[in-house]
Amino acid sequence: ERWIGTLSETDTLIVAAALASKEEWVEEVERKYSDLESTANYSTPSRKYADTLSLPHDIDGYFDIDEAIEAAKDQQKPILVYITAHACNNSRDMENNVLGDERVLKMLHDSFIVCALFVDDNTDVDGTSLGRKNCQLASTNWNVNANPSFVLLAAESNTIVGTPYVYNTDVEAFIEFLNTAL
Image 1 (spheres, rainbow, N blue to C red):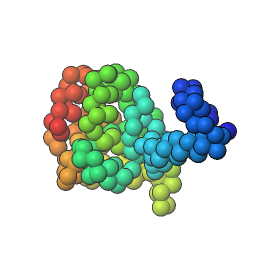
Image 2 (image 1 turned 135 degrees about the vertical axis):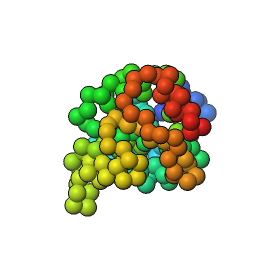
Image 3 (image 1 turned 60 degrees about the horizontal axis):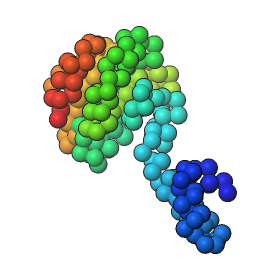
């Protein structure tokens, strides 16, 4: 009975009507619940740091570059690295005015692996903060020292594509930037 709540009303009626005995009905509900659990890996909660970090507009993403690289290889998609900070008004401005644009959201969903690296996060990672680790990664690997900044990485080689995109709320310019990786 606890699984019934995970099914839509329509699914519940279909299952109840299609199955004659209670035992068969329970088995079918358990199967559907299991199917739901197997698709739950797509959401961010099972990813590193997703219990405390999130992306705006329900963007599905990662908060660890190694996980993003693995996903990019598996899905053959370029990576959009979003270098941001919790306490950055310009990051919120980009999120509201650019990342929230319908066209941008569609591109991110369909064509990219998104990885947000928070440079001011205090989560402890091997004796240092996640923010310090991310800041060093951005500076060393992509010569990025400002946030918000965006870096495109090729799926197959993880090499930078084009030049980093820094704070600019021009949606058309951002779409053009994203297109350089496609």
